[in-house]
Each structure stands twice: as C-alpha cells, then as structure tokens.
Image (cartoon, rainbow, N blue to C red; front, side):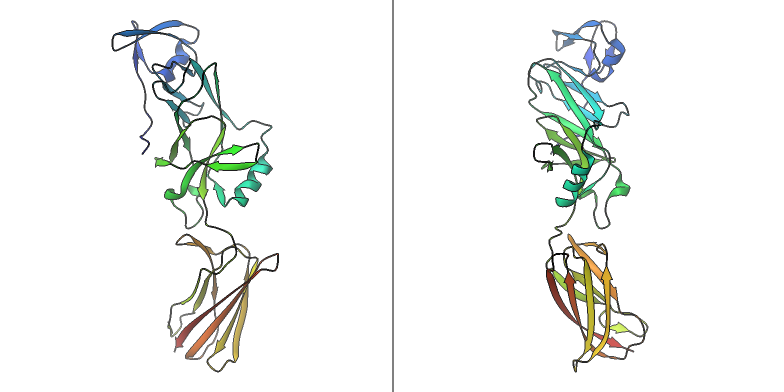
Length: 285
C-alpha cells in the first residue's frame, strides 16, 4: 500500500528546509548534508536531487509529486501545471464516457526536465467528493492518465484516498486526473425485482430492473389470468447504481386491486438491442 505524502528534510548551515521550500532559495548554490555526507544542490523551484528525493507542489499546494531517494537517476526539475490549453477536452470527455469513467476534478500536466529517467514517484491529486456519481464512494476513486496516442484514459491499478486526495505510484509523467470507476454500461439483464413485495395497503410497488444502460424501459403489468392491467415507460439516464450495477425504477401508481401480478420489462437501446426481464409480486389491500 502506498503511504501518505512524505516530506524529506535537509540540513544546511543556515536553515532547515524541505525540497518544496527551494523556491525561497532559487538561484542559490547550497550543500545538503544527510547522515554526515554532503551533496551539492541548487535552489530551484521543483528541484530534485537523486540522493535526496523530495516533494513538489502545484500553485494551489493540493497536487503533489513525491520523489523517494533515487526515484530519479539524475538531477531533475518537476513542474505541476494545469491541463494545457491545446489539450483535447472533447476527446478526453468522449473517452471517459466510452470507458465508464466519471471525472472528479481538473487534471494536472506533470513535466520532468532531466537528462536522467524517472524510476518511481507518488502522485497526489485532489478530487471533489461532490462529483462522485450516485451509488459510488471513495473506494471507486482512481488516478488515470490520458494517452494522447490512443485517445484513452489509462487507470492506475492502485490508489489510496486520504482527506479528499487520491494518490498512486507512477513511473512516468503525463496528464493525470482523478476519476471514478463506473459500472459496465453494456445492455443486458443482471436482475429484476419488485419492492415492496407484497405491497401493502397504500404502498406502490416499484419495478427495479438492472439492465446496464438502455435508452428506454417499457413496463407492462399482467394479472394471473394474463390480462393487461397497467403499462408505463421510463427514459433517460439510469435511476442509480446499486451493488455495482445500473438500475431503472418504475413505480406503479394509481388504483390497483389485491392479487398476484407479473411485471414484464423491455429495455431498448439505440441500436435496437432488446433486454427482457420479468418479476412476480403481490398487492394486498
């Protein structure tokens, strides 16, 4: 598991500071002493020395890159900037929808300038909890980077959420953003039920169908003799997410007699895919 963000402190003759504070010494030549050994360093914002590692923040102080000792092979300067102006937002948005991901805030463009290579780093990004889709929680928060070659988001496998930030280990820098993983949108029957069952007195039975994502849902209700007693439809976005799947709710309102009924559900997609479901329930007045 990735730990919480670390600060690496160094001792010099005049002060004690962290690499994140190098901005105050920009342009100065300093010697850093660690464990009795002296290492040369220069006071540049975002400057990282291989033997020391360090921490770099963006202008807001919320996004961070933590470099462990020997996380870079040569001296490096790391910059954390907003997404570039020429970043194709529409391609990124289309990819989010296609890949069942939801944006949880602005991304960051992270650039390392060095003659060496990045061995490992911990990236920390802030996210907005209010953007979590209904039915999703922080266990579904991830960090993803946008691959401009494939025009797709590549979700990092491991993530740790702490105080409205999400962090993950990375081995290259690019455009990274916080995202939430969504259920599969592929149309297909997962489950169908009616609740409450039985529906007592003034309660309205609700047909809940787990169908993936479809364009419309038609509900017809038959009694035990096969007589059609009610019909209705639902359109638009799914009602919500439960147990990792999208669902649609349809409430049978209005007068109804006591008895046993069957709800037949037809979910339809734009390409005419038809998903069928059926559920039995009772009404007691």
